[in-house]
Amino acid sequence: MGHNVLCVDNDSRKITMLSEGKCPIYEPGLEELIQRNMAEKRLNFTSDIARAVAESDVVFIAVPTPPQVDGSVDLSYIEEVSREIAESLTSSCGYKVIVDKSTVPVSTGSKVMQTIKTYASEGVDFDVVSNPEFLREGCAVSDLLHPDRIVIGSDSPRAMKVMKQVYQSFDAPILETDLHSAELIKHAANSFLALKISYINAVSAVCERSGADVELVAAGLGLDKRISSHFLRAGLGYGGSCFPKDVKGFIHISDALGVPFDLLKEVERINQRQMERFLNRIRERLWVLRNKKIAVWGLAFKQNTDDIRESVSIKLCRRMDEEQAIVRAYDPQAAANASRGLADTHVEICRDMYECVRDAEVLVIATEWEEFACADFGRVRELMHLPVIFDGRNLLEAESVVRAGFEYHSVGRRSAYPAKN
Ligand code: UGA
Image (cartoon, rainbow, N blue to C red; front, side, top):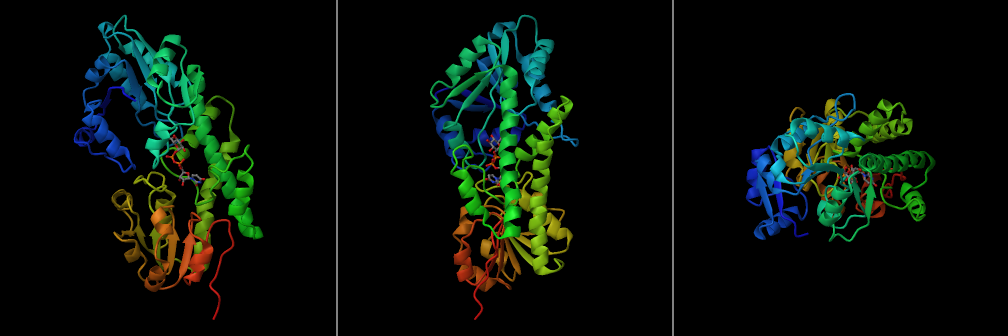
């Protein structure tokens, strides 16, 4: 967008990698974007927060806000970086807009403001703004560049003006709110999306019992513009670094405010049950899991990312490993992270999707990578010991896998079996 951006991190390994134009995570299109902007001398990296604060008009805070054991949001990184920003601010720095991009509980902005006031020297001139991020991993670049909306929350008209300049070349509606409403929009949006997923997953359970097809039901719901077809894909449940944490966080925030949000507690319960139901169906089919060879395709929490945080697939692998199944797994991008994440289990991570299914008695599809849908199922059939697929993401066409000789089980749809000779 033509701005000069100086990125700061206290992880020097990341700064070194990025300074060499290498992206520390797998995210389609991001490395090219980094390299192009570095070549155009607009994007730089440093470990020196004081320099970054001194040189910038706008300072974005984008640190993690992980969940604590009780589900509340850990704001220690926000507090720490607020202090560091404060200590870097001087009255000769000029006016600064401090923007919170991290997902934080409503009213955190006021605490950031207070912290900066407490630790900065006299006479510093700044405002605090909330500008929640709505991009998704796996399509982050396109989501960032083509957002549905930009939310800017501030109680200062001066800061609002600066922020509108930051976003002036984006073709998206800008919603201007007060500081706290913008913070709340983020938790409310993520929790609503999680609720939609749990809703369709609860419907998928009813479909399985009644013989209805959840894909058709979702299509029928989604055509109603008031409902929309987005985030109505039934599967193993939501994972990742956002929905599980943010639903928990919102429950905790509401409890703390004395207005318990029981609906979201049910959203969480449905999400947990969804994986359990799937595992039960695999167990029912195999009778016992012990010593059964199970191949798992997909370890990332969703397609097009190497992120395994709160991945349902990883949980499933762990559960099957605990029951002494012989689990071998493959993922096109998340293998390295999964090897670390499953290091305390017997799960073997394979380098090749076909090698992974050799001699397996079940193939479980746990992440919706495109390459799984395009696999050569004739070859898979020859390699497997038993031709059984459990598709936890409704990725495959039942007809074509059954034609290839497989027994096919998916979520919220009837199981399909090859014709007996
Ligand atoms: C989510 C939100 O979609 C973003 O808008 C938000 O900015 C982000 O969290 C964040 O707070 O940073 P993300 O977690 O990257 O993005 O990925 P999603 O595409 O939302 O998927 C989350 C989980 O829901 C995945 O496990 C995915 O498989 C699952 N999902 C998604 C379904 O099971 N069904 C669906 O229909 C959609």
